[in-house]
Length: 305
Image (spheres, rainbow, N blue to C red):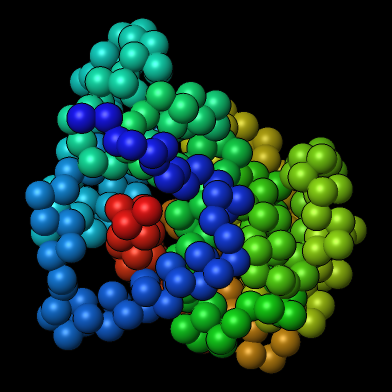
């Protein structure tokens, strides 16, 4: 039976309001507390999540699959290698078929347009598990982690150091949604899209150096210099980004209680120094775990729409 109203999707942070974000984060914290007490409400009983992976993943697959199982549901893993999507089936046709058999779909792929087209023809909620443009599920985990450690992000200063990639672009959206100042330091030619920066000019500042971006920051964030699909550029990028490593010396420019985050996998000695990953600054392991809890809360939110 076709639902009476259009499903609610989560393709970017712009798909939720500030109040809805706060609800999801607080619910994620609650679900985390219940999980650690050995209590997981089976709110997803008889629900099935279809997971489509064009880009491989560790944390995305484990967190979504575990989250569904812990809440009483099931997840189906589909890669383009073993589905008709990998043999040229139109996205629109796949969306119609798959969404008639599952209750929600998560897609991790390259082109953001792929997720958008799938959502346009899906009868169930679609979640963006990552595209080359945005990574909203990771931001939910990052926001949850900061809230747990320091409270609201409103009025805080966040520094992004490194590539102006999908994570950086999602932090730009988060700056508006969470009311914080975002300072971005990228090598020339690697800054995020100018239209995105200009649209958030009241929240976002491009800085000439990592030190300028990090000065007085409450949170410092980075990511790998070569994202998936850019492996052939790795050596070249290592030379270009050599002055953009986040290490203890750079963190000394931030506030004394500043936090460091990285969405992982991290390449120690490249974008982040080896010692910083295990420093008191770094909360990357809590951040990683929170993918599980934040996505549970997100899925519950979407199921209830």
